[in-house]
Length: 313
Image (cartoon, rainbow, N blue to C red; front, side):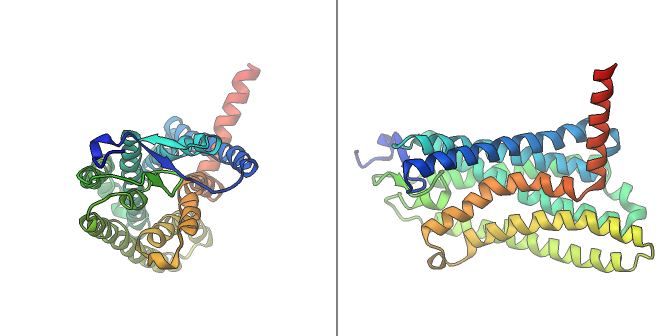
């Protein structure tokens, strides 16, 4: 291969260095997870769209979260499944950079949506009388669209910085998808600027928002403890605890992957962390919200009962 970025036509994803039988088991297991992720998030998205009782700001943002999780899984999982059955594990240069761009864009979007959802819960619990004024549909729509646009623009910055680099070999990515740090290791040029931008983005998109979420939920907890009604406390805490579980899973794994010292996490361990981040987070989000949210479960029961009744008639 010539030492010129324009001559790079594909990368090789090394994936998991395991035997063919283990790869087949992983293929079946990941296929099951992938199918469940799409079905579960699709179900939540459909329920929110069809049930007018869920046409509130909280579920409006939850529908966007479900959409992000579906897109997130569709970006990385199919290529991973193909690579488990293909020993060469190739991916084109254009496909690799596109996957990196979309991975970052969807990750940033999910981060911002989780922050907005925490603010929504803060206003609903701490300022209930002003909730409909503060979280009106115009504000919700602007915030949601802005989250998507900003996330894709930030991901575009990373993509442009990658495309300026020459890649002259080796062209083997020690990962199961085109993760940005793994791709940068193959560049035969100084990547300091890329890493500085990644670190700055992590501080801006992870640390800052996490601090905002923690402050919001500290005030929420203090307000919940002042609620006189036991049912009121239970309902408020149930809704917020679901969101906190999702926040903890997302921010915890992301901060460990991008901000913890790399020497403490060998490459194989990092693959496991990204496996959790790419496969399990999108699958667990709908489970957490549906199992711990009475309104979602109620909407699902109503939808099932309506479907059963229509079939009987």
